[in-house]
Length: 219
Image (tube, rainbow, N blue to C red):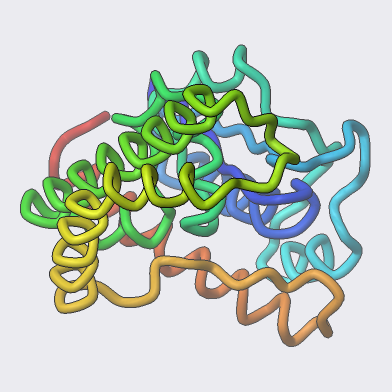
């Protein structure tokens, strides 16, 4: 049984649609997949948006949903975590560093090949190291999160992270040369047509992933 967790912001639009779409595909094709979703800023218990439910209904999918905030138990449960944007992915890696090796944006994972995966992992490790350097300087100068940084601390940070930022820039250039935009735009507040476009984008990526899993005989 493959356990998939989709993650967005409020868990009322993108990730519930992705969850419902993958579950329907898995049922139709008799694949052993369990699917859940959560949000990095979700309020527990909110229903999916009306537009999301309408668009799913147009695809023949009925989905009973209540939002939930991401929590360690969900992260541990998942074999694979697919986020809607790079921001969500960075949140997951920052707050749940042990999950790094199983977190991708949905579109990153859909387009994955060994070369891209290696680049992604290098970039993730660099981002984690940059965050650690910042925390180290903050502690060295006894700064709280809300404190303004003195020039001495800013200078120390620049010296520490300059080589890492140069390496990150090189990796991002390579990623840009080989990848499309890895984010799924948030339809929140948009028309039903905006939700349709989002759902179609989700379904396209999900079907691409499922086809790869079948070729790899993951089931």
